Image (tube, rainbow, N blue to C red; front, side):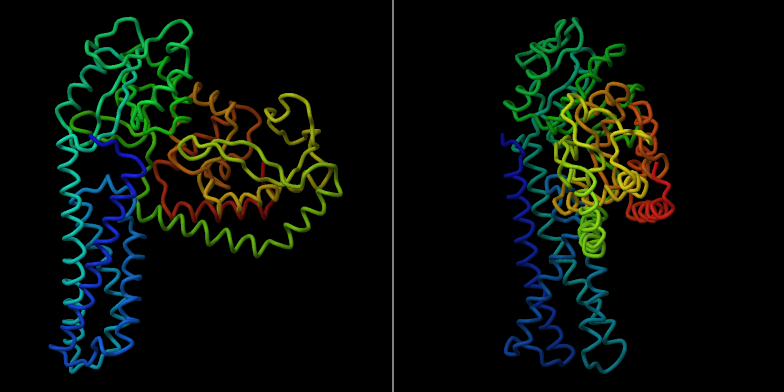
Length: 476
């Protein structure tokens, strides 16, 4: 058995890429033979532009396949998804080539252009989809034979945990391999040799540190939270630790305490995936590209304002111009957020844990209030976007202290960490800044709506509303 990890994912991704390179080159050769022999075009390997065209053709198709998500999450491919992505990407690519290449050919009739387009589509689609299907089929068979596994921990040891364990044991193709249980009550119904983390008065055999150690030592990838009814409180307390461990978290769907989001029916087990969102892979890739390009444009365009703000902060009070603070991001990964300092520097313990109000005495003068009103203090976060810590649109990242409190108050908050946090969000547009954790949870209600409906169109709409809010000075 081989555990699926970054190394194995990169190796499988490389197989898909190399197959696409080889068969795209073959498609170019075959298509040009057709152009030469059936349409009488003198475009052979003896022409220098033939090789230039081959290079651009190959790079172009690889870029297209990358954008539609062919290389994202390689172990989650299915044969149906391979056919659909190949068909859609080939269609878009061939339309581009129709205008960039085919219409430049000298043909005898308009029908010849149509025939050339259809021949290109058939060749490219067949040679793109076939190797993908072979690689995916082989990978799925490896899962069926337990060649690939995702070490999985079940939170719970009662009837639900037992039923889930039996069901997953009979279906190997999803890769779930149960390696242990975290017991949430005294009545353990699991009778086998697997590790069981037992709950005592102080937590799980020494608390959450023990849970983190077990997840790390056993390379746990998935955690299924399936406590029996009345035992959800203990599972809820584990969520911050599980997010920090960056594992894939699944919830039993009939636990109304957690119910939100799309239900994924894994072999008759209805589970809610906390670590996934509803945005298609191709939109995620375009969102990533959109984030980078717009951040570069924003930094270049707003550079004079950035310099002016830095000078005003330096003159206003002593301390650094850029304020760095630890926040929790995608899949619980901590990062340092960048902001223009709008408050006085303080050495008082717990100073950073106090949320800022409208008339907070810590804000530095008139310019500090202007920065917060028009959200100028948030501008350095464009550099966080370039680093990959944040996105333009997501949810507002919080400090670890508040994250734990928020998840304990509302377990749905954990679902937000399937996204990168954003400079702006639906919560910030609709609600604004929060004064306490109660207001944070109110604001999060809008972010729950976003995570169920996230799309590029929604992102663009939120960005426009954010610009409107900033220009009108309605930042709360």
